[in-house]
Image (cartoon, rainbow, N blue to C red; front, top):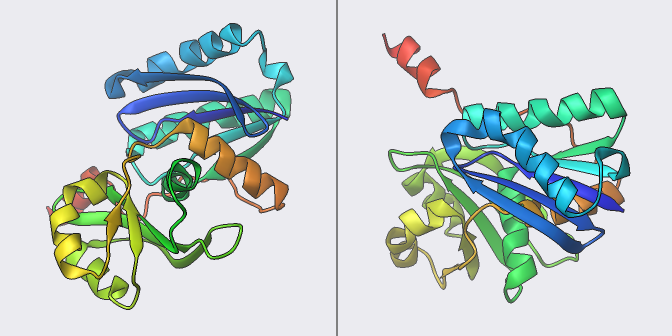
Length: 227
């Protein structure tokens, strides 16, 4: 199965081509302000470098957030346009689930993985997964909360591996507050990990739509309500 995996949820625009679980090609663009202008050219470049066209792709995988509000919309809209025009199968995977696969693909498997994405002002997007079975299972659903509230929820668990830029930002606080906390060294959202997560979800016949996942209101909406 040929997979095109697209992540535009952060500062990086990351595109990967997978042949089942094998990474064929990955291109990364670090230019958050120009995702809308660069996404189609970088997809075209990646396809050209692998001697493929969109017609050769069997599955599209898209990061549907949380993350950059604008970036998420760009990625989702791009994938939906491919689906509408070419009738390719597509699946949306959250940034938080994608980060779990960073750990599973690159590190020793822990009992629990907590994905943390920085949402500013000590707030974090987070989700806790158990990895005791073959497929990671979400045991605390995705939310956006203050780091201290998250710590209270996690105190009942030992040996959690934290991953994501939120884990880097709050590593000291988490280490002091929780038992046996460890930290991943693979904290950037990866279109390859995203693709693997999408392939597994597809093989399990999970119904994952392409609707963006925001978990909180945008900064503009919050400012408007405050005023």
